[in-house]
Length: 315
Image (cartoon, rainbow, N blue to C red; front, side, top):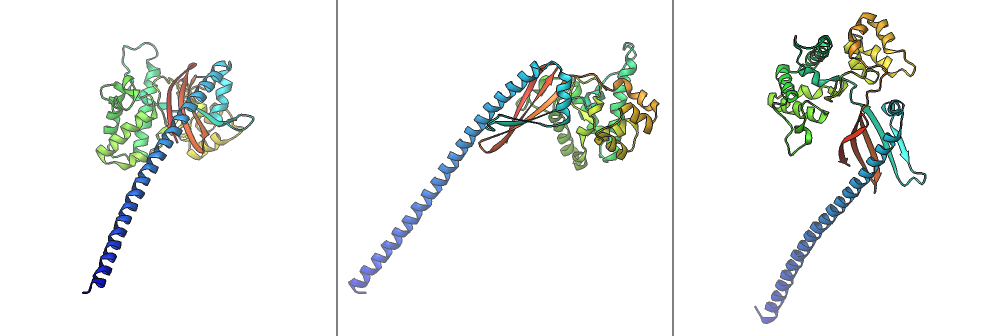
């Protein structure tokens, strides 16, 4: 090999090595850029979330102020129970949608844990009706959805109601401080724990919120806003008829409807646990709003004129 050939080989080798170094550097630069870009996007996201949370607190305060200044609460919430209310500024820069639901639209899940004894005062029969209504509903749901071990699920619910054992840990929620089941979120933890303990996926198909309410303060069912499924169960009416009555724009009173389809005695049997006209003052409200191209949501409870349990959901 002469010097010229050797020189050419050395040049090619160096070029190849330089090219390898260049590609390696480019790879590192690209990788660092991706990391930095990812970090920047994360910071940007956090900043947006912070702004969204601040905006949520502003909206929350504004909504509560309106609620507190509105004298006729029944009229206000009758509208909010029926429809989502869109609100916006004249310049359309800010807008939100407000929707509320009554906390007592179903059979209170805590009625399962009522203790009815002979030492109770004259309203013993009323508490007995609350407990039997909840127990019979739970049994019917267990059969209809073929829950594999309903007794185990029932015991887990009673443990939570009685405060002996809590499925929600301290670091997860404020719920450990309360007796009874006070939200659907808390109840969902119980159902999930049962589902994995028993390996029963059928329990996840139950539309629990159509039948039960999750508030330890509800003493009656706000039947005017109950689901067709619950009405059909309570009065032994076929579901299609109940759905037709619920969806009717000009429906008769519940008493007239039940009397026609199931008899007046059936209505009178459950009358003491129903709320037909009085405003119970126990509501759960949801607010959705847009900010910087994203949609955000928060909820809170408004009970007897007091706002509590604010929860921000983010996007």
